[in-house]
Image (cartoon, rainbow, N blue to C red; front, side, top):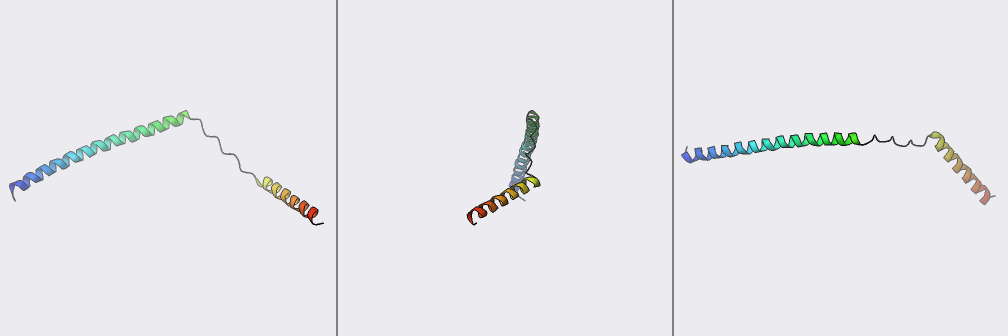
Length: 83
């Protein structure tokens, strides 16, 4: 093996170690940023009032009443138009 190969490997290893260290620092910074984001979201949620429950959908009685009135209106129109 040539001496230059060992020097090249050594410098490449140093570069990789530096890159890994930089990436680890970035990873830690990102984790602390994510933690702060979650804390801010929880704090904001504590300021906002609880959401009101959604309005209830019409029940069976309302549907039957509408159906009955539409049937009655249809009967009245046919009775008046086609005696």
